[in-house]
Length: 633
Image 1 (cartoon, rainbow, N blue to C red):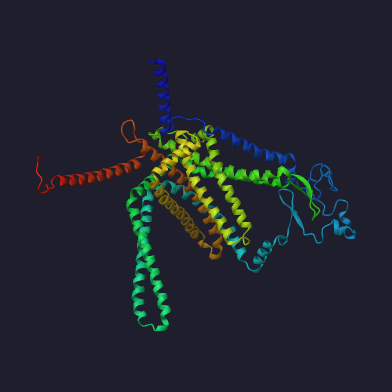
Image 2: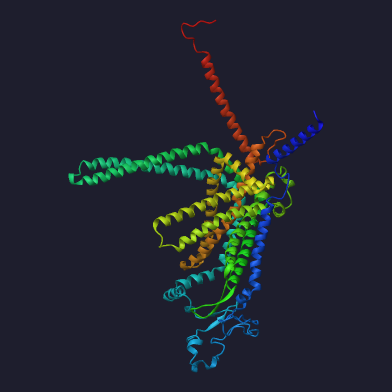
C-alpha cells in the first residue's frame, strides 16, 4: 500500500481520537476561548450603552438634570443658545448657580402686587415656602401637605392617631438592635451553609416522614368521613318524610363526592409510597451531595462572598442605569408644551429608540452579571471536584475561576444571558399590557395574557436551570455554549429521576433552612426587644429584621443550591465515564463513593436474586417428567 496514504489515514485517526476524547468530558485539561463572536457582540452593545451616556452629556441633558433649567430652556450656570420660537431663551446664566425668580424675567419681583401682568407671567399666590434639595438644585415645598393625595392621606392618618409615630419611634429607639439582628442573620446564614451537611439527613427524613404521614392521615380522615356519612345517611334517610327527598338527594351527592375524594387520596398515597420506596436511593444521593457541598464551603470560604460581590455589581450598574435614564429625560430637542407654555426637551425621530436600547441593556447586563456569578461558582466547584488531592488546590480557586471566566468564557456568559433576555423582555411587555388593560379587557383576553405570561415564566425558569448546567459544562470541558448545553441536557435526561429528587427534596430542605434563619432571628429579636413594654413598637423592627434575614438567607442558600447542582453534574459525568478501575479512577468525594458502593452492593444483590430465580426455573424445566408415549432415542 502507499505509505503516504497510510500516514494520512493515521493522522486522520489521531484527529478523530483527539476529537473523541474532547467529547468524552476530559475535565480541566484544555482551555480555549468560547463563543468569541458573542463576546464581540456584547462588547459592541456595552459600547452603545456608554455612547448613550456620552450623548446625554455632550448634548447637555446631564447638565440640565444636575444644574436645572428654567421655563424657557435656559440651563443654570452656563451661557445658553437661542431656541427658535421661544422668547427669553438664550440667556447667560453663568452667575445663576442655583435658584430662579418666580416671575418672568422681564418683571421685577418686588413690583409683583401692582403689575397687571402678574396673572399671566407669575404664579398664583400664595407660593408655599420651599428649600433646595442637596442634589440637582431643585426646590421642594417645606410643607408636606403640598404633595400628592397619598401624602395627604398619610398626614391625615398621622394626625388622627399616633400609631405611625410610635412605630417610627420604635425603629429609632431599636436601631442598634436591628443592626445587630441583621448581622446575626448574616452569621447564621454562613454557619448554616457549613453545618447543613450534618443536619441535611435529619431534615430530609423528617420531610419524608411528614409527607407520608400527612398523606396517610388525610386519606384516613376522608374514608372516616365517608363511612360516617354512609352510616348517618342510612339512619336518617329512613326517617325523612316524602317532602324531604331533595335533602336525601343532596346527602347522596355529598356521599359520592366524599367517595371520589377518598379514592383519589388513596391513589395519591399509594403512588407517593411507591415513589418513596423506589426513590429512597436518590434521596440518599441528595443527602450525600449536601454533605459534600458543606465541605466545598470549608475548602472554598470565599464562596460566601459571592452574594456580596454580585449585589455590589448589580447595585452599581442599576445606579448608573437610573442616572443615564434621568439624563435621557432631559435630553433631546426643545419643544414648547401647548398647555403650559413651558419648554421641555424630548427625544424625537430615531433618537427616541435610545430609551428602548437602554431598557434592553438593563435586562441583558443584569442577567450577564448573574451569569458571571454562576460561571464563577461553577468553575471553582469543578476545580474542587476534579482535583484528586485537595491539598493541591489553587491558593484561591475563586480568583482562578474569575480569571478563567474573563480570559476564556465571557462570550459564553453573554450568549446565555442574551437567551434569558429574549424570553424575559416579552414577558415584561405582556405584564405591562396586562396592567394597562386591567378592568378594560374581556375575560378571554385576560386569560390568554395570563397564560402567555405563565408559559414565558416557566420557559425562563427552565432556561435558567439549563444555562446554569451549561456554564458548569463549559467550566469542565471548555466548550461553547450550545455544545455545553447539549451535553448537559443529555446528562440531565439520563439522570432525570435523580434530578427531580434533588430539586424537590433539596429545594424544600433549603426552604426549611431559610425559615430556620428567619425564625431564629425573629426569636432573638423578641428576646432583645422584650424590655420595651409597648408591644406595638415591636412590629416595624421585627418586620424589617425578618425581611432582611430572609433576603440574606435566600442569597446565601442560592449559592449553596448552585454548588449542589454543579456537584451533581460532576458526579453524573464521573460515574458515566469512570468505574473505579485502574486508569478510570473516580474523582468523587468519600461520601459520594460510599453512596456508589452501597448502590453497587444493592445492584449485585438484585442480580444474584434474579440469577437464582432463573436457575430455579431452569432446574424445574429439566426435572419435568416426559409426557406419556414418548421414548428416548
